[in-house]
Amino acid sequence: MELILKQDVIGLGYKNDIVNVKSGYGRNYLIPTGKAVIASESAKKVLAENLRQQAHKLAAQKAAAEDKARQYEGVALEIPAKVASTGQLYGSVGVSQVVAALAEKGIEVDRKIVTMRDAKHVGVYEAVIHFHKEVEVKVPVTVVAENAEELAAEAAAKAVVEEAPATVEETSAEEEAPAVETEEKVEE
Image (tube, rainbow, N blue to C red; front, side, top):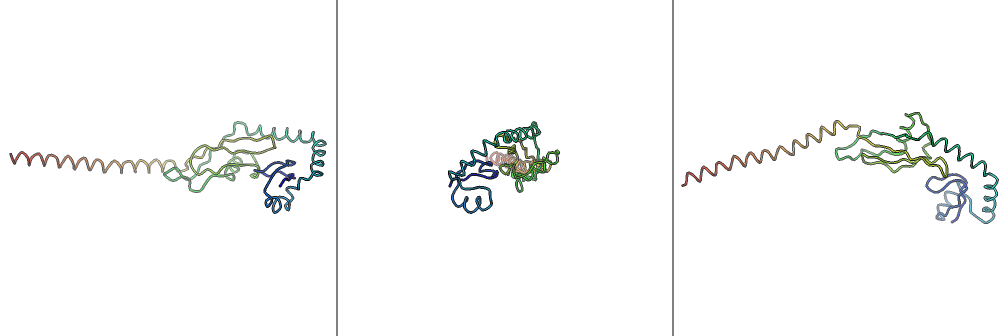
């Protein structure tokens, strides 16, 4: 089904885009909520005329979006999260945590224009902020362990426990070996 979007729909397209979607999605969600209209020939002609008349407004909107995007140059986020000893997060880090971290830095952004794959492990991820059809900003997000000291102590204790049985076995093997040698000498 071919539709003309009347407003931005993240993951699908931007206002005035002509998109192809499944019929059910278009009929049951996009059209009833007013986010899209059917792309008939007359609707396409009206869209072309509106775009021609609004060309200067669209250029101004793009310039404003580029100004907003400049705010985010050099911004990198570090988000602490509780982590298991395997490096797996308890829960995940998503868009809402990214928006909160940006707010702490004094940068307000609507969570609806931010996309990010949920982070379920410690590492570096990327959040994308969509300001305009042609203006997107990628912000690096580093997920770090909130309880790093506890994890390090736990790993050290685990290493000690793994090494301890090996030394006990080596010691018992050394004790048994001399006993066997003395018995052989006695028999001779």
